[in-house]
Image (tube, rainbow, N blue to C red; front, side):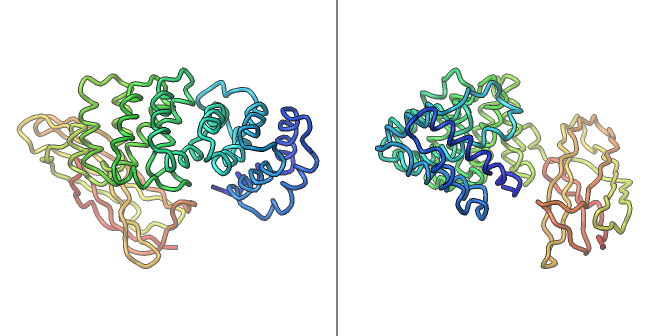
Length: 370
């Protein structure tokens, strides 16, 4: 998480949390709470700041945890009205989530009640994971009940908290080894009407696919049988990583499993020497050599040079094409070499392939220079 996010936890935010807590617990030392939070806060990163505030909560909230949890819940603002476009403001509740994970593990019911309320304002996906590790059966039972909750944020929590590889969180190793308990929850959410939940379900299956590609592909193939549009969207998004790798099971589930019968002609790369910060433009003609109509998924793979001089491919989506016998399609695209925080560019000989139903067809080579 970036530096700009950590700056959300500044003096203004700390004092706002202190005011909210004092409103719920009139005897709380508001000034002392803010003073203790701010001491050394600027030296910490985002999660470090949230963790520090959570520790100060423990020093100032009433004990034991059930009493503190009641104050914490009473201090919360209104529930999120939407499932998207709610900005960064809900991040102010990250310390509250950290507090529950740190101090509530010996108080299952009170902690789950607090997380149920917190996830309506922020998300309890990080804190619930601690309870999945300590109380897997009880927590899974609670999540099964929450999968039918009328609140979209609670339903999303069911799939997001159980992601085996949730970013910025400890991995759920037990679910990496055996994803069946997670899949049982996803079955309850596969026809959720909210795209907010659908995206989380898809991301969870994408996580599962990195450890169990066959299980993920078979699940999606089964889900596509008589699937409504929302479930079809989930499957397409869920299999994105496997499709980029050319996984035959994933491509087959999406209807692109047949080996393509095509020819690539009229390939063009421009310029042949691309400066870092510039872009490569490419085009080619795709011709069917099959005696019957073909459904084709066409992507491109750019083999980027790494710092050590080796190359690593990155797949970019192009388009889906339906070609009749001897049919042709002209396809073009471009690749940016702008420097990004997620990808740095290095000089050297690069290459680009056309991926048709996961099968690579070399398109050409080009140089990248400073």
